[in-house]
Length: 236
Image (cartoon, rainbow, N blue to C red):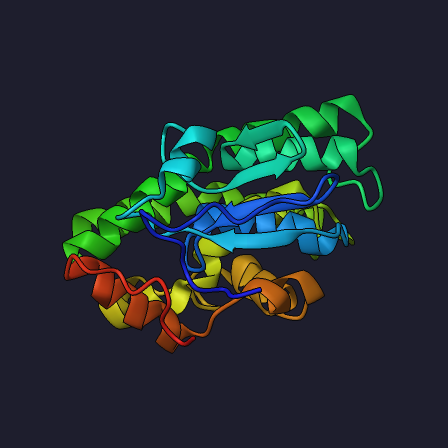
């Protein structure tokens, strides 16, 4: 199956009954969250990439918001990354990603809900070109996650990765972009030792290796996106 993006006017790629499909975009961090869960839980699936500037009508029929990820299986459609990931964890119970203990699950839920503060600060730092105001805000919101890792161990899930690890990961994979754009606010062993060590462990996970791009690819895509002509098929 071609990984090239389907754009407006392209025919709907037929879906075999019982096949799980993810509609994605190769460089989208939100879609990567769900691709990580699919890979980690070893869930058979197929991938259809979408041109998010020239969306096919059949994609908008499945998600009127026009965002990825979207999951489809037979006559069932689910979208929004956190909803997709919860759905997968419930329907495919192997390799569970949430703690069984209700209190620990609730604490994970708090960190999942508030992670949007990190993503917002990340994008502001990137778009500002590394301003001190944006950088200080980014470092401020990261402190909660640095402390959480210190309390939990190798991963947010302790000895093994959890939903929180995969929810957070895409932006930390893109740390190399910030190192180029805002080097003063790069994550290092000296300012965020727990996060820095966690990043190294995450890079070794099979699910991360299966879904990641290198820094150069992320930089190329970011440059094309900033120029108003995102190269969704870069590298193909």
